[in-house]
Length: 338
Image (cartoon, rainbow, N blue to C red):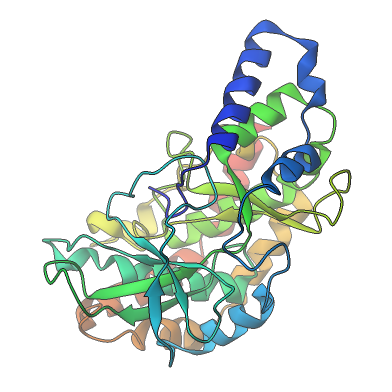
């Protein structure tokens, strides 16, 4: 379940209106567009310092990739309203936080609930996948580890913090409706779908992601920074892939010969069908260029209290194994869907 589920009546109203318009075939659908939606959001208080991202995500991504922990203090946001549509904790729960170093950039600290099985190592898997995504240039939020203190004492201490990349985000569930209906002003959703689908599908298959199936529609979002004027296209926009706590052999999927025999990642069929083959070749080249040494550095620097040494070894070996087979797996799946 995504960390970015939120309370926002406007987004709910838009989603309902779109669903009704699709069902009725009503011409009103042509009035909806991403800039129009962005304009309606302007009446809301932004928790990310307005429309500008300060500091820029690229700057934070480079820093967070280089560090396991950060020298900063995390504070729970008084307002837990976020960017998607309604209040709902993810399976493991979490909280929106800000740091004393970057008070205008919101992030999500998770998990909140302590897992009775430490082998699941949710925070460690999030950090490893985020660092791998940085190397492969795939749109995954930067992550750092963070040890949580304070009350209540029965909640998880070995946490991670995931950066909220955009002040406005729509979940895949809503984006699908925009794509199906094709209202004026949503061309950017289609224009950026093919490359994003290629990158997300290839990366998910490499790391063994299990949580981006079509029935988990809130773990993929389209995020954007609204333009300065309501009629302008977003200043920055991208599909973003969230929540990698159930990757890297989660649930024993990479035990034994599992890393070699596991197939492609579950992924939305509409995305697989839209894959751009040139973009697919690019992400596969980037994945294959991630060296054994880089994989080892990313995995083995995770502390023991986050991920046991034997599990680090299994994950590192699984990543090397799957790096060699991911091209064949995703290329075959893309051909079948075309």
